[in-house]
Image 1: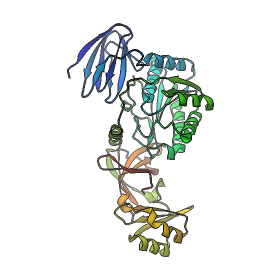
Image 2 (image 1 turned 180 degrees about the horizontal axis):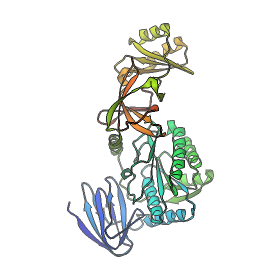
Image 3 (image 1 turned 180 degrees about the vertical axis):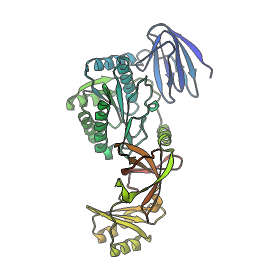
Image 4 (image 1 turned 90 degrees about the vertical axis):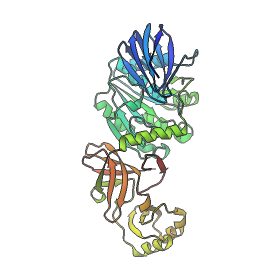
Length: 427
């Protein structure tokens, strides 16, 4: 679609749905807290929508692409002025910098408000850091990771940022790995401060219902040492946080019109981000020479011929590897696919080794992983295959540096980076 020119008087606004490109030809306009003067341009990503507001009489060139469109918002539909007022009040109250945790349900506008906070901090010349703590719909890093970026220019979508540091979580569901998320957020907040960030803004996931979710969010505010918690679009969550956290708690409305994403669109966004970080080269790592976490392979082998024979008899598959750990036994079978754990209950009772974890040759592929370097950073990797005879693993990754540790997650993706299965130990 060809570009068109919008002449806006002061205070007038347009709602822009991406993908689109905006360029201010004259005047001064605001989008997501970023104040754009003549000659400045920004890109609105697909599946995103923002209010473009003229702060002075302005002429704006708008180029729409794909499904991009423009509409005039109704009265009260867009809370931009409220968002800016709250963000500016928070930043002005923190002369020495502060930590702000942004919370709310899915599709409430949390990520947009986080970006607006960063833009208002940049406007004051205060270097911001953004911690993307949404493992399910990660933008700065890949799904299953917590990432930190330090933008030096206007931010409209966190996906446009490059991560400064990444911590591996290994799941896109926060509940089972809440403790890992909390320690990672705390670690990245300290790192951001050490690298000169004045203000640190934490964008969280949309898990906010149920006691476990509420306790997790309260712990996140505490461990991040948040000075403020901003709740977007959920009065019940706002009231709860006011009662339980030591931080100041603020509330902002969600926009009444959002570029909401379907379940399938969310899957496609995750797929795009997996590809963005995992489409690299293959490298082989000897698991006997590095630390291994998240998988039972790599532990010292356990030799017990009677136990081995019992398992082979019950399953019909050859046992390639056994390892004991406190409270249980890990068994790797030379099977082409998943083996139902229920069928092994009789074996588990007879073996008497506690819990029994069974992994197979056929499922040791496509596992989301991380390679930890000497700098402590976790680098995304995808397990391609694992030789159970030599315990050498082949990964696809962009990281070619020294590896101190291999970390296996609980997500499997196929060759086209689509999620295939999740929620169990694969290696």
